[in-house]
Each structure stands twice: as structure tokens, then as C-alpha cells.
Image (tube, rainbow, N blue to C red):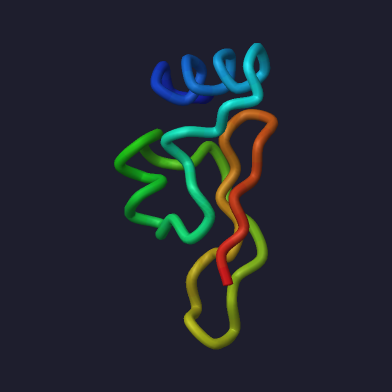
Length: 64
């Protein structure tokens, strides 16, 4: 279940299109600080052995 912080951001984004405070180049730690633990994880990176996709509700963050 998405965190309250994520739900608030998502509603604002859907209404305004403003993605702040999310920016290109955000790290996993940046996203975790903003939204908490992801609802789901996907696609483990072979190089880093960490999940390359973090899912929050309907939104996915992809990390290289």
C-alpha cells in the first residue's frame, strides 16, 4: 500500500503535472527518503544485485 507521502505527491502530480521534488538522477536513497519503502520491487540488476525497479502504487522508478 502506498505511503501517505507518496499518495499526496501522486495526487499533486496528477492535478498539476509538477514532479517536484522528484528529479532525474534521484538515487534510491533520495526516493526512499521521499516516499518510504517501495510497495514492490522488480528486475534485479546483475551488476549491482539490487532491484532496478521500485514500485509505488501506479508509478515505477527505474534505476540504472
